[in-house]
Length: 145
Image (cartoon, rainbow, N blue to C red):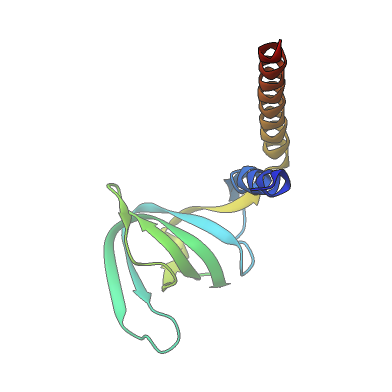
């Protein structure tokens, strides 16, 4: 694999890891990636997308993660990425829609890019790569003598 492709893959990997969930004061706009933390374990009812009207109810949910589809004063429509209970993540809920009552929401955290962390990680990985290169180059030079 060419070195440029490797560098791009490493850069994409580094950038992908430099996001964090940060609390927000107001409900974010539609298409925002969020994590909704409930005041206590709650039941969440979901429906599938377009044409799939089968409802599923999940009990004991503490957190819901996904993308906001719409929000009003009393309800948040969330396209789910995951639902979490005290013990584990609930499988097979991705892309289902959940209507979450805002009265049960303790806080909403929005996924945000962290520029400072990205720079620090990039510098650290670059320094590590440069050190490895110098060590390998030195070893190759001295092995030749």
